[in-house]
Image (cartoon, rainbow, N blue to C red; front, side, top):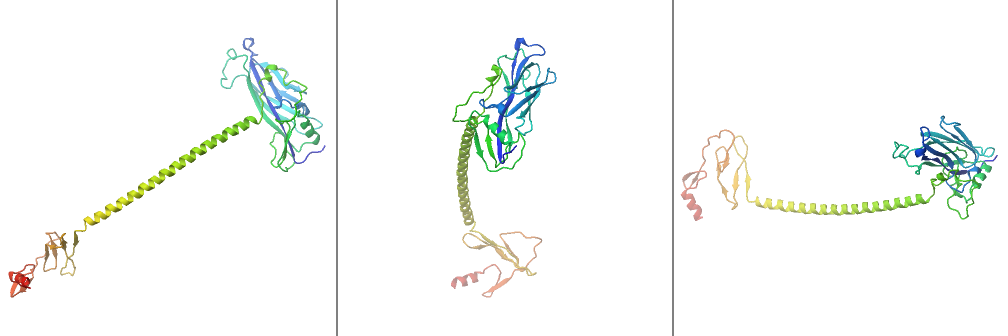
Length: 354
């Protein structure tokens, strides 16, 4: 047998269960009627081309818990009272497909998920409890003959997606390697008229109506809705950013105005205090130099006293410690001795004459 290099073939499958309440016909050990099945999501694909047999393993409490089916529809219908997990083993075309068996597990549901405590007496008999899963069996570098049978199972045309080259080898139920040529064996769209299957989709007419359909339309609609939502969110974010920028510019302008007002107020304060200038100091016998002067707004010096020690005091100001007694200096003006700081009448008249 020859294997095809760089080829990955995907076979979509669906498996699950459909259960109905028996209502008034129920007894202690038979409250529901259910069907466990394996099928193709494409109602025009013939699984018998790829599958040799399907083995269902039920709960040990059932009589003949192992059920083996060699032709479609691959399903088991039973009655029971409890939920349990069953296994489904798929054996691929023997002698053609050098592939390992594929194992699946499925939990049979008898009660709705939103109300698992619902009693059989209150559960409607015409409402089904459906539990189904979708999956894809992936064959990497399949046998050439098995690959041909997989494609012939389509009553519709198949699609081929070339992604480059892939490494050989792979197991079932693994997603295809990237950079591989992927062939999906049950395409949704086709230009041909599908032929009728040589067997019914199910032996249970009430079950067929609950078989779900799988296609790209729902995915496309979901992607469109997601795109519209993202575009709306992006517009909202852009509007909020523009508004934030405008508010930031307003804050900057307000801060600039506030700084200009503070500068004007500070200049006025300096001018108002410019009318008074004071310099302090003292000259004593120790050699320290100091002076004190108070100048009023008219520029006239007032209340200045100089002692023998060189100390000055202005306006009756205070000092630190006990002040030393000092002898007032005198100045001779026109033959008249005048204490320092006082002017004689003669000196005043002489100054005036000058």
